Length: 124
Length: 321
Image (cartoon, rainbow over all chains, first blue to last red; front, side, top):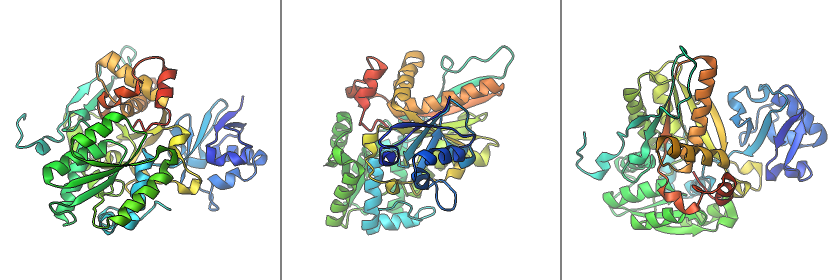
């Protein structure tokens, strides 16, 4: 038995359009390397040059976010289900629009500056 | 206390309810594992968002960003808009909401009833269309104020100052706090407070997993992480699909008589997961989770009846949390 991996639409160009692919590996990192051998370029979209998960990619093992399970070192076993999703806020719609306006509106930008961190992580 | 000077003063202070029928049974002699629901639907407009809306408006007033008669612009797919509409009405502001077409009709009716004006963005365009619409509106009205709930520290602070202390007061033995992850305000604020006060507390996030259509991204680089989000505050994060959320929402009303919206079903799904793990490990657990809102606004989806597959189809492409 292998590990089932769900691929989001925007990455299916790497899997010949397949929604679900299978792979093997003891860790998430191993699994992605295995997948990359058959779906060249996929790993490069998920992992940065520095060897970390891309900021805007979320990977879930059996519905749990791998960043809290060791990230690329997260342990996998046969029969696990891995889901790859783009990182979006719940109700992505509102956030996308809000982030866009924040760049436009002086008042929103001022409020964002007052807020903790203040770093703008949304990109457009 | 049951008497308040005004509706705004009645925000928060929601009851925490034990769920004896839904809590997992533990083996004889094993430590108890209990589930507790914080009824945030008991807020003035019926959702947890009242807390954030009130704090954000107050903070903007104090900072001089909002003056009487100003217009607040908020891109929102739901409860925040309803909360802001109520607060804006009582504090003397005009509210304009930008929202996608694919939200439930009840939300639209509620917003209008509270006096908000609505500008729709086409659902088909996904977030890109919302961005285009919102940018255009903001450019045309540079004087409108956006409170920007995703990056507004007053959103998280509302929960640091109210939700967190209320939970600790009502449940000093709390071991887990579970809530939905959207703007991340609830989890960041409550989570930070509880981490400071309760050693070993687990802060657990449940995020809705929508169908692909809802994401509508063209590229992985178009992802978003709210400015408020700090992964260090969380212990774990679960992605919950539509089917599980619906199943748990129905279970909650069937078993415990609590009629909640679907985002609460997703939260309950994660709460049950950690509760069952505690049973397996033989550990005591008091798992408190959030009832984000009641189910009234979602009745028109039809997802409370019929088979789970029907419900899943009914919610396909909708923002149910």
